[in-house]
Length: 434
Image: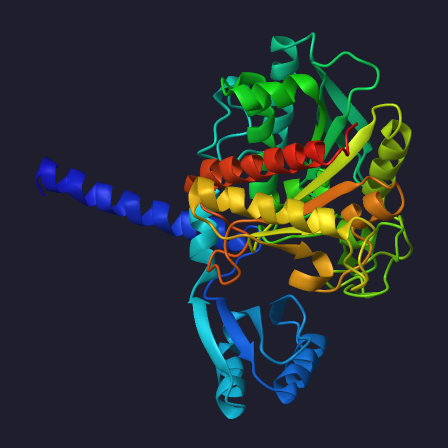
């Protein structure tokens, strides 16, 4: 064999061995995989369909529901494990259920998304809106910002999570007056919704660096408290364990996690939540049982009057909605008309900015009944008058579900910030900050 052929054979052998070892690494790691999991968008045409899917959600551990079957004409997204695809397809055919397949192999979407994450140890100055970032990187970036803006910025540490990770945020105070109104924003309460922390980080950056006159006015006239990741344990776990994890990481026997956005002590566990620790919307063993919930409650109670917090914004994904309280009842809040008008204005602003359509209305009216959410508690218990929750991109029938491509981070954040600015301007004009 010639030296050239020998080297060629050696190279082929090396590539094959490397591929085999990489294959072994992937399949022997402890990271959850969704190879050939299918995502279906089904239409429940009849009450029989509703009952059927209620039973399926209750009994199947191979079908992940994104929402609960509630009424005819409802559309529902369901992820089906590979080994149950045949059974699920048979069920759809047998009961004549209309459907679309959004994804035939959900792992491909996850793999694409993980390739958009930069290393933990990058220079915090490299933060951008074209990638997703680890918790450690985000915290380093916030420290860097404080060093750059020591007179206006401070790190907030509201306490530790269930697993002992600090829950950090940013306080921006350019308005030094004692009675300055504060805008409060929280995100990352649901771990897998990476676009929410990315959007809050974008907002922080815009408030500090934008040359736009209106952004500068809002940054200087109002103070801002922003918590990008309320659920740091869960967020870390989406990078290191299961990209689709939603809850915190508290242990309950054989299952982990409480849906923190069902754990707040306002009509807790009355609707739209589960008492089963193994369910994705488990509301916890009691109201405000979780460390993360307790820390946020304590911080807001201590700072409500001290910092004159008049607006509470919570960022989530996905479905493109701008919602206000309440989730547990169809009854209207006392300032329903104002919140409804403000929400419509915010939705219209997004359409002007990007062409995207965001629905607006009360939580109960436009998404589904739910209880124990942070925004309902903020409005119902703390009486914060302007309280909104965003469901960011994509649309309700998105094939990406919670895994928005990084290419859409900046445009999503831009439209969300434009809507938040509109909410503040409209609330201001109605006298809420006087």
